[in-house]
Image (cartoon, rainbow, N blue to C red):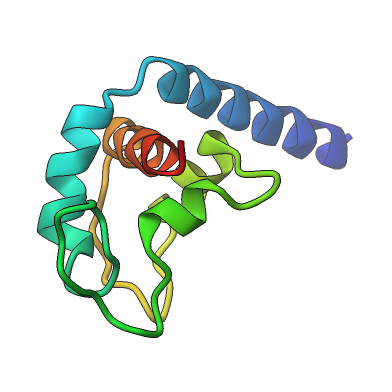
Length: 104
């Protein structure tokens, strides 16, 4: 019973995040990327350089199986190599939409 409830809760969260991704604003994501990500990643075509250990957003956006919802979820959890940006769900979706746009 607990496993079923946990699975339904996870599915509901992912579905809600997918809704955010579909309504995401890549322009807002660009602002966030330039504020938080440009020190390590190349986030725009006019950026001269980033950290050589961090892939450019254009490469991330072109990765096989790229999924905005999964990227947004990834951005919500703190990771050792990335700063804790304390993004809202909408901001994470906006940033994921911007990364997707850079891959096109």
